[in-house]
Image (cartoon, rainbow, N blue to C red):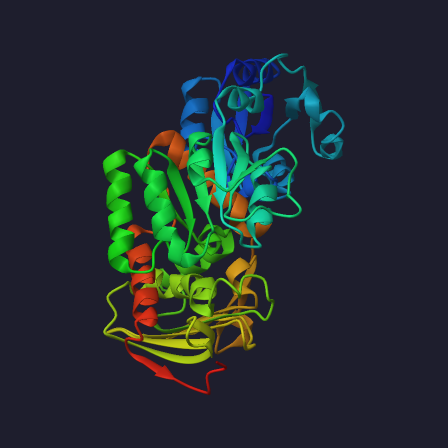
Length: 443
């Protein structure tokens, strides 16, 4: 029996895929089809798949051409699969000619002619692009513009800000100081204006039927945040909290390990986020710049119903509510958490999740990590985990937002309850509830 093996993403299965599978099947007696996992696709830069792994597996299975289906999850797996399964022929489309010649050492390699005029990329491109407008002047606006270029089906078309930039980021974008004008020309907005303007900008966008991706906090009180989510639901729109950390594969995996009991019962979480770069400090305080990301693992693991909470804050400008440093202590029935954020002080930006059997350590800067360690009393039991992270997670966030808009389903990695809790803590800070001031105010 001649075994043939082939691999692919098989996103939005089309005639070209089916013809490839038919020709592969004709090369032997038994066809094995490897379908790349979502995580492995990310490592290869394929972040714009429209279908989940299970949807793609189901589509290939429905063709009736595959005798066996497996999932490709890591670099070098092709060699392992060929050896393990005893494949006689490896085949792939002719657009990969020469790339897989190294596999000739293990089996025969055949490049099949590609069906002209159709590909998954072309199929995706035929769909109308999601036109996104940017709202605000924060420095990381440029990052979003650059990362959006990696995502098929998305196009940044314009920017609204009260004052016009002296040097526009892109000549192809239109700039306006009229928010209504921007909203007329887009399908969705990414809001990164001053935190106190998030509620106003988000509400207006939702009111005229535009989807919203908003930097956290979405609003400056929990009540306002809940109101915006209600409005989005009533209008059938997507509202997503833009905390890019939530879309990091490494972060997602470490959270699952902690919840799965890998380090025993979790009793403490310590998250530190600091930066002395004067990028957004004039408009964002430390709490708004860093606390949403720092609170994310606390709320995702322990929940939002804490028993007690206290702020320790050193203000840089008390009148403008600019904190140079803030420490937040949370007390839960099952554990405790400490969050430290600063734009006027420096500390090691690490995340430590403490358990009864061991702990998870994420080195600085943990909020955009591609690596973490699970450590135990016996160092020989320690494990290290590496996951690809491109664009600090921003492009994955854009993909999730785009898919949510297309499908009409909530694909937010940050739940509504957590968004409201983050906004609630910001509101309490602004009102000085449970706040102990330390140091001397600069002004």
